[in-house]
Length: 413
Image (tube, rainbow, N blue to C red; front, top):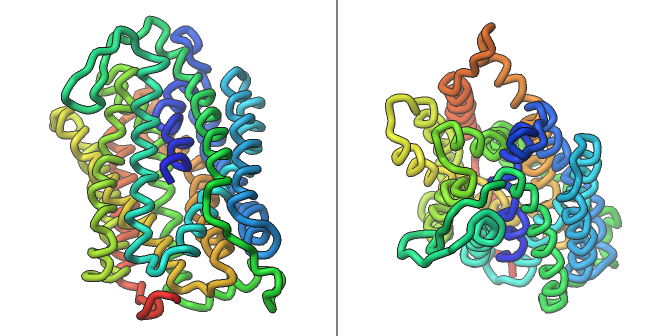
């Protein structure tokens, strides 16, 4: 988990800034719709193909840990190569190819955990929290290597700080090179993971077909559908969050540090997620995750009256959202899935979380920006974030009213 999410942490916070920055400043000068497609649409294609690339292959044909090693090696090399490209077409094509190879490993990592632990609800959060730690570690390490010099120790996070290099914006593109290195290291580590064999003798040869039967359960269908608006908000945050922080006056070398506040809060909440799920149940924990997205964007919309320090602190709600909603959703999916289709069920939920939702986000992001830009070309940050907040609050109410827990009362043996 540490390495799995370190691959993402290396680039998610800073890449949108690099893509949207002007060429005069060292960026690529992409338009909003182009950034949305590079980050949103590309990831969606990987999630759409994941049930075949990950679910069917791991459930029925290959040892999961070895299959992950292959996917990570290929995707790591692609990410490294992409860091040296400058055209929109090259970025889009390479991002699509990367997502087809990498996105399936997210659900495979989850299913390996659920396959080998006794009680997923109790054990998964303790293991998944290391993904968040890896995400933060990569976010902090990248600036130390590429964006700052004369590093000195300090007692406050990120514990090392220095002077920003002169061409910091241009250096942001090297985040993909760093991500590729982590991916290749992870590929080697996969051979140390526990043996996870496919179910070749299962009655239903097509695991994804059996996994689709879960939609007969109203709770899973509602959960799958509500992931669409919530993960649209999640994706737009990562697309626009960095540029929003620069708008507030945060330097490029500090963006990753500022956006790591959410993942740090995620660690704290993830550590107690199993207990909270046991006490409150999936319905209210996942509703809490939905609500946290709406509240955070209300505060973002009030940026003119709130101090920047407070806005940075409200990013802790991001950690609550990821732990309560995303991790809670994967845990619930495992509890309603049969053992021989675990990989496919995780990939099916990932289809919404990593696929359909980012696709919608990639198309909606430039649309929302157009709606909140006046005739003079002035972009209204407050209106933009209030639209995001409304989506989160409505989603919370709908989910809380319609969802009913249908999972088994006892963990699988």
